[in-house]
Length: 374
Ligand SMILES: Cc1ncc(COP(=O)(O)O)c(C=O)c1O
Image 1 (cartoon, helix red, strand yellow):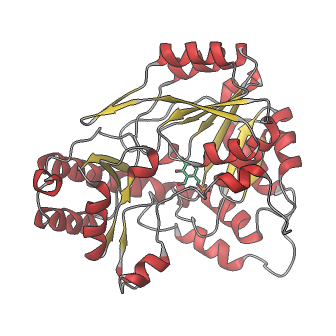
Image 2: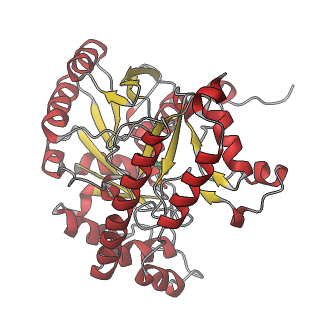
């Protein structure tokens, strides 16, 4: 008899994500470099020159610093926390797994504020935890989160971990600090850890994000940050967690050795420099203009959706899979939101001006939503 993996591995599928499926593109006879990717929400202007230079200069022959000390120190300095409050990961996706392994177990409950990024559920279920969802209402271009209901669920279910994506992928809504504080109080009172995934924090286009770092001292909060999207180093992989020392200690035990390579550590340090900050600010301003253009055009095509706090927009289109496929055949890939439980929506990331114009002009040539539904 052949060996079988543990039960959660038998039952689970890999999570669906944006970005290219190279086999799918090959099947359509499309070369990846000819397709514009609106399905992963990365800074479309690429990395700052200082970041690229730092990556090229990195020493790839030796093992990297296992503790990533210089980068952790630099992040700690920027955030005003102790270096012992920073854990690094090979992308923030890896840290989701480490958080789950450190805090969840078969007897525990994980509460996910959905619809949202699929990795929280996968990581929680792999630890054998019971996963519950508390859903935002999403309808006709509006998204709302019933905070009181969420607090009641927390008090009743006493989850060990609550996963909140803020701004949320894919709905783009942002929970402001007073509400986040109330949630943290509720989760802490129930003995749990609140994980706030701030992957899109530095890509908020309209308003300044709130600071939650001073709340780390409560010991019940972990802030998850990604550096791959804002600094356009998704191929390199880099993310971090800010949390109390005891939380970070557990994450460092969960991490495999050398999980952050030398080029990623060098890129991270360069990304914290003044020139990289200026580059990102310029990109953000351009993206804000393009986001406004896209929202206007999508609304005009009767593809409604919320304004969206970050660099992606949700649009209700009818048959999302059909629309995605039709656009892909034209060399444009958007994210079909069926895997988020939103089969009538696509998520469109904000790209360069000429690319957004091309998307809009292809959308205008496709059959209108009501005909597509018929
Ligand atoms: C909400 C959210 N968190 C985390 C990640 C993972 O990002 P990375 O591992 O590139 O830092 C993603 C990627 O799409 C995301 O959307």
